[in-house]
Image (cartoon, helix red, strand yellow):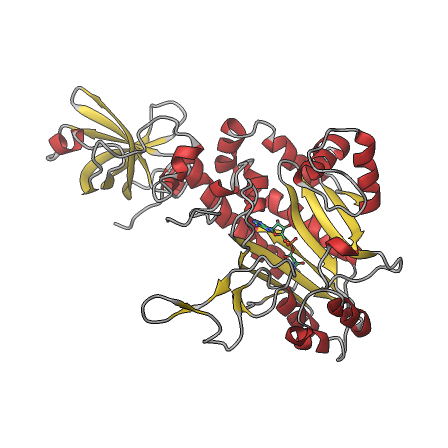
Length: 453
Ligand code: 4AD
């Protein structure tokens, strides 16, 4: 008999007869002469109910099975008389694969997110985290579908790099270990090496050859800010398009977020319902609105004027030339516009060197997409494709131009207007689940002082 997944069994129109199921005990209730065992195999949120009775030769062992134990069982799938479930399994054989003692930390009760973070190795076995990580998987699939259906090529950019894409100096340095565990800098590559903060610069080179491309991989930031939305290691989706300006870049960013929200609504209904019930009552309403309504678009200067007019006692001062802080972003999305907003044309001083200078000489063709609960979820821009402008920009900031010779050279050989953006994958999972802390959407989060597991 081949192993069945509970997700398929529960959807069956007819009983397949005999089935083999392997999973973990969520709960067990004993009655006189029989037990109900709720089994979860991770394929979906729901458990399947198993009825084991005293005719089984090892029934005495079964009665002693505890929450968290791993089982393999076969039996007949029959219509259930229990409420809210169509099928149950009448067990014919139950084997204990792995015992969990009474000390198993995930007994049937609600645990706080803070506690569950201390057992990151076990929390995927809870309903909430199981659902979050299944949704993560579905979102990854949906990202590839979205781009592949539009003719984009999936490219791989390096994790180890010598250049600082964002120029923000938030990079992790990579060293080798000498005998005795002393870190040795520079000896392997001959120059300082870092973990990448973004695959953008390399993705641009590929876009200037393959047209439309995207990366989807891990990126690293040594940002020492302990916030709900920053991780030291996170995944980023970075499309890059040749012959594309900022307006077209915005259209793609909007279409991508709408596609991804729609995909989880269509394909993860059961898992989403958990978040809608227990985490964020507004979730379904917000996702539906995000899919249906166009995003607002507002120039940075107007966004600042809106914030100034609001007369809110913001913690961080609002002034033209200052970057938008999380509290400003959330005011714009949640109070002023009441929907996703794309802020564009930021002052050049607060944006990286690669963004295209606007004709006003003060702003660059940049955009941030802001959504409720999170703030910035996407950052992107049209890139400076003019060699002289780019050279001047690089020379005006504390970056070593010699490290970017290859990047600049691409502007001398068939340079074209091109644009792209970066979508933070964890922030995306937060957006579609309503989970408010980035530590809870990634199985093993890396944040300051946190790398134990
Ligand atoms: O705005 P960022 O820094 O943009 C870039 O890195 C560009 N090179 C992307 C591009 O144009 N190809 O980051 C992009 C997004 C942010 O909007 C945010 O969602 C996410 O990446 N992000 C983080 N997510 C989690 N933890 C962090 N420390 C993050 N930093 C950025």
